[in-house]
Length: 249
Ligand SMILES: Nc1ncnc2c1ncn2[C@@H]1O[C@H](COP(=O)(O)OP(=O)(O)OP(=O)(O)O)[C@@H](O)[C@H]1O
Ligand SMILES: [Mg+2]
Image 1 (cartoon, helix red, strand yellow):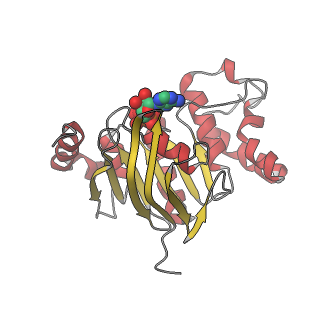
Image 2 (cartoon, helix red, strand yellow):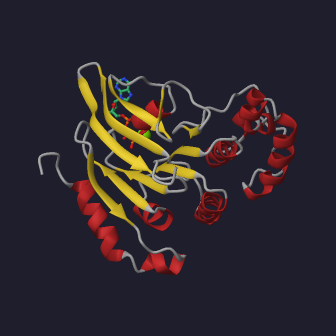
């Protein structure tokens, strides 16, 4: 079991009409690994997460969890899409408990959610509706909903994009702890190089549509701190240059 990857993606092809987005895309993720996906806007990051979440179907290639091929929606994955997809007719508390309602353990999760509302800056908004919340608050509610899901692989599409720096740092640290303590496997899409360096064990940089993984960077430092991050200027510059490269390079 030790050597089996938690997640294996092999030879994925996906196009929208005749526009090739993913071509022969392959990578593996170990159990408990935190992997960030960086790449230029439009390169196919959200498309990839949509495929893993079972929303889009690939033309070729396969996705395996612990060596078993999976297709369609799979309970191993908890997905936070780029747009928050909160249900407008449900209160915030009911929205964040949505998946537990589907899985039939709503009571326990509701208690846990009520506890977490404070950490997520949503205390006092339990009975509000999504339309009454700011963009950042909606994002936090969608993030909380995802992490309350009883899944072992989190697919997170820019979960911290709209947050103020204090809340973002707090939730980033909380997510790393969750990953380490509960051995959750995390695939995080982000545009923020610092966020990727600080959080990840490994960074995958996608090229232009159809180009695949341009580079993979392993972050070795295990005792990371915000101070440590300030010293990563060289790495930050390297990642920036890789993202900036033209497809033909
Ligand atoms: N439903 C769709 N129909 C046709 N083309 C689409 C559709 N969704 C996305 N695309 C195109 O596929 C490409 C990849 O889109 P995707 O949303 O995966 O990019 P992304 O890497 O997540 O970008 P961003 O960083 O801006 O979120 C883009 O060129 C986009 O225009
Ligand atoms: Mg996207």
